[in-house]
Length: 255
Length: 368
Image (tube, rainbow over all chains, first blue to last red; front, side, top):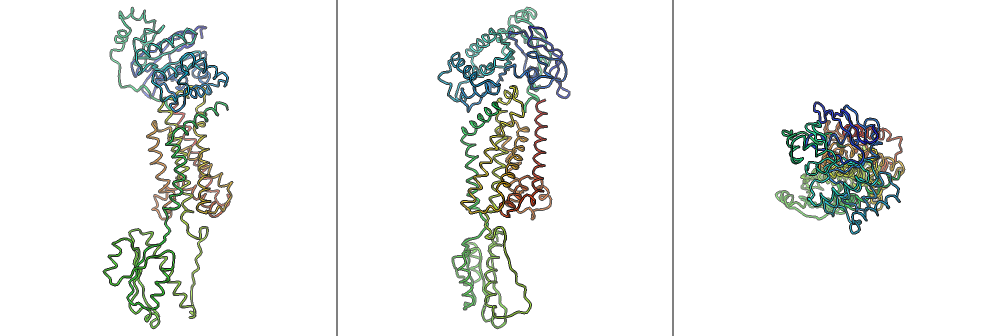
């Protein structure tokens, strides 16, 4: 692995029976980069991401995440990454504080460390009033921020965000991207999937997946030049003119 | 280990903050035991009985008095013609009518033979049967009394003794059944719901991406329910000892061991259910239809297995609850040791291992 790359993927493939969800993709992500992983629903981006975070076994190919091989050391990968799902999954019947304590605990953080992190978060996000509230009673925007902060709790090398801005209003989205920038500036690599094309403009580099393949990969600026488009939206439309809408996105990776 | 404790703490938060599940966990066992103990019983008490006495002599009077004196029958009602029999049954209160033949005592003393007819309302066959037995035995007793002086040369005297539950208290047979149902419900349904809930919320995914191993996640989810199920078992036993005066003949230690074994069996079923269902709703439906119904109907809890048709008997063999009921009845009522129930215990252990292996396998497939 080259020094500066935190993710290296080579010909990574995932098949479900006859169906190839991810078809021999190759890319790398540099340290501290905000990497946008784009694609229509069913293009295979969730499947690809699940292989990278160690909860789905690739059929073939090579991949290293945070310096560990996805085939042989998925457990080591898990210790070094953070993950936030599109559902902002937190426990609704636990308070903000209890959620922080619980997730800190499963990443093996000491009690003192959890307390320190929690105070930091309360300070940074202005959580003082709601830290003892049940998460279920909070608005979606708050859940999103807390969910992201919890994914960063154990200071991971890379944080994977699976459509982290679904269902929230534009202002909250804006604020959320500020949080993303902030943690990228402090050296955390951000791997983010989205289908908001305006968000793609915020990324350092983006890849666009169509039918299991990466069809384009570059900075937003260069992609727009290459496809002679004014916005990323146009780039995307030109690439994904006929996506197959019915392919199963979530296949196979539940327990 | 510290992670594990944190996990279990979280699980208890879930349980104690959800009033509904808390009610199912602790309200249900108590309600069920009390219900089965007091209300639902197949003993008969204070049954209304009517008499159609065509002869009205000293002997019939004596018999009527004897019947009324027993605690099983009350409310004397005299009928004077055949048509009335039908009408008292239709009114519904009277469950049995005794018809004495004309010249009852005369026939008895002169011809040594007379008849009395017992008519019972068989809309509820079990009750009718019991009433019939009780009445016949009162008549028989009377007959023995008046025959005391007469020596019959060849005679078979039946001597019945009901062992292990001499008073035929139905609560003694219901307690093992209720306990089985409760443990099954709490262990299997509650765990399968709580695991699928994490799937629905999306937190399961987060847990799987975390350094926790899948088996740690499952163990953490299941452990609190082992604890709660054991508490439930203790509550049920205490209730039956102190409220229903149920005897505990066998070793409490053995009883505890078998209960934990059954709890683990039910939990592994719960895990299995959670691997095949993706929503709490499905998990609940599968638990109710797939587990509760067979446990109630086919385990021998309410309906005796021996009187089922053969196919159902075969099915009952694969229901863990059937074996558990046999085991705890033997321990609690007969006071036997492991040497008498080792076969049933082995069956339970085998089933438990089978379910665990199966759910681990299923679980792995889903992870691929």
